[in-house]
Image 1 (spheres, rainbow, N blue to C red):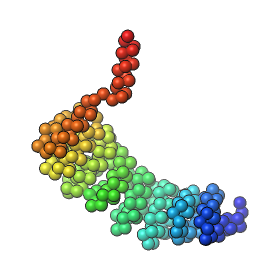
Image 2 (image 1 turned 90 degrees about the vertical axis):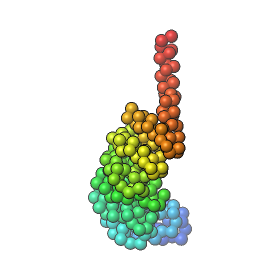
Image 3 (image 1 turned 135 degrees about the horizontal axis):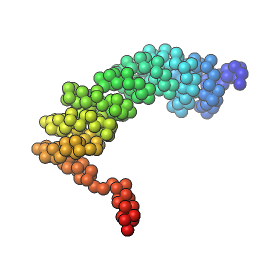
Image 4 (image 1 turned 120 degrees about the vertical axis):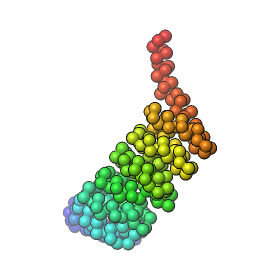
Length: 267
């Protein structure tokens, strides 16, 4: 398609009819011409319709490195534009943008901070972990959940920092670290000792989170820690630990199938 045709499509992005804008954005994304990066971004920052914005974001993401400069420039603008620019960068996944995204993970605007944390998780670059770990203990539940999901996406790489936070952090940080470890399953096995200690804490919320995390880890060390927690004077802690122990002792469906197969083979 000629640049003249692209110009016509870009002009359609200003059409009052949402469907016209949507089709134009889709076609421009399919064409993926680097020269359209700036005008696509200009329309994206001002587009009022969610669905058109979504397609424009996809279209810019299709441009890859050609769209990085315009997205970077927008990170210094108003919160709405910063959020959208971060969304674009989360589609492109250029490791060189880590240093642009990381400071916004602590942005005062919750939507910007959440999108920056999400983008860092999508990048998957372990250099982002110190920044993300430094955000543990946020008062906002939704922000905590986003950060927990992002940290969990790093798997075993996040465990040393989470273990340190669990041992040395403030009360809110320790609670959040324990909860995050609970999303890592057996990757969190190196943190069993720290979780065992936290399960004996006088902070009931911390202790319960630690017990829940122990319940997601297989192996004798985690099981022994749960046994100790089941004898806790805190009724919530002991009840959760006992329930997790009972669940771990129940045969899974896979165990049952294996047993049935062995029985048939023996018969």
